Length: 76
Image (cartoon, rainbow, N blue to C red):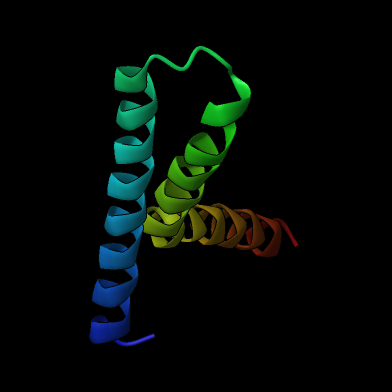
């Protein structure tokens, strides 16, 4: 993925976070007390956070795998 695709992906993630937070604030200001209404905006926020931090998480996982394989190769 090149730099422009990464930037667009992060911008979409930020847009989804803003959408989820605006829906939650609308529900809060309207006085809705049902937790069921808040499930979809919470899912939006979780998905968008995973979109934004996907590359960081995958680099951590790849780094840990790389370290383990280097240790295994040095032992054998």
